[in-house]
Length: 298
Image (cartoon, rainbow, N blue to C red; front, side, top):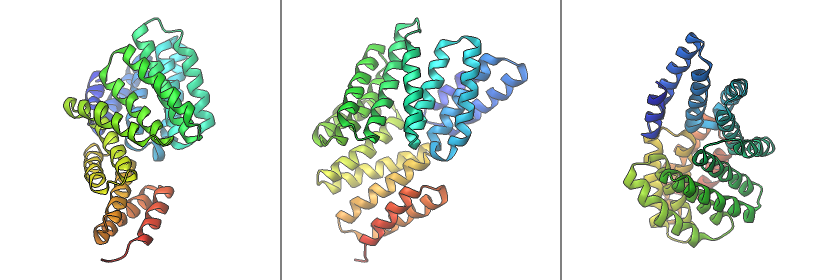
């Protein structure tokens, strides 16, 4: 069941992965097997975060803290790092930056206790990737790029091409944040998207297409931005990523506004506003409202 939960996640079937992890957790608790209980907790929390970290953080946080406590009790250094890294990642995602920084620093310190050099490199890559996102949110773009570059280097050292692509995507996001739009677009189009499409990495492709659409819009190419946003939206719906669906609708609506296709834009933005309200995304709701005011019938 543990392997099945991982396989469904790798295939982009997040809901099926959650179901497998839930069965695994119930079985582990029944068997009083703390190793698999800890494993199930991390798998379940991670997939819940994939679907909707903002609305499920209140469930995810205590789950991961429970898993962290078990990992420490068992003396499992690798799982201690895993749980700390994920706590840090999700805290950054929802804007709890101080807590996120604390957990990520703890994770980075704990990495040095790991014996396997490949796992150590992978964990360093992921932690630096999230430190890059944190620095972007704090407006320290130079540090964001530095952490992202360290993430790419560590991912290449670890040797998994999917992790390299994810790290390169973080570097593209950091480059965009500091205004290097052309450099960011080259990373997305030449390094990330070709591999993601070839290998069927739906989550990576979705994130890359969304970023490509945003970059093309900022560079003055709304027609290309529209196509990218539509592809990102299609993937978000396939994988059932709730917040990403709303973000893609907003991105598509903006592209349609620039193309002066106001009726289509209003329809898309009204969808974004409705879903934002239903899912309690206040910032996205306000953005949809703002963009709707800009639109008018053709």
